[in-house]
Length: 186
Image 1 (tube, rainbow, N blue to C red):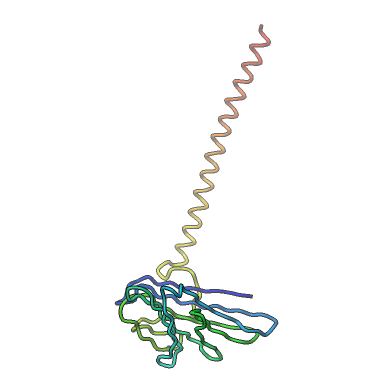
Image 2 (cartoon, rainbow, N blue to C red; image 1 turned 90 degrees about the vertical axis):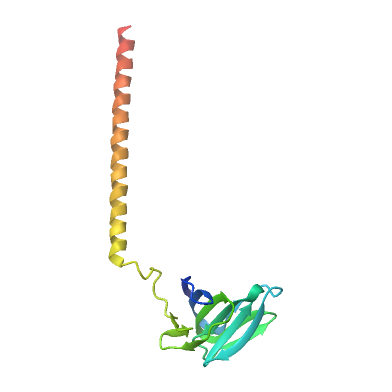
């Protein structure tokens, strides 16, 4: 069993263009190694592993001062490596839960620290508990209203199509009846 929850925030904050929070969960009835990895083009990037504010970090540096910096929220029992320019986070067991927050940008790389529910990146709280794919400003009742309105519009269109088809069938029946009477008269 595998499940991925992802949250992407593309609001620019200083040098940060995008914040990404990922939670990947895996479960199996056999115990084995679980690998979470990123493999950027080694000719154009450089991967550095580290630890900042008691959080495991990685930085993938690209051209023109661009970077992708990541923090592993739940780094307990995780092996972190960069073999052959492939970033790997490895866990062992019947299940694995990878909670990773990343920031993408250019210039000076951000700093982060762990909070109770996620990671605070340059004073911007980032949750690692992604629960919903609904945008935060959209309320559930408005989605229900949109759904009901869509159904009603769909039904209205079907009724109009039915009425038009019925008129066409009646017209064709009248034309057929006239043709039959003309042939009988001759």
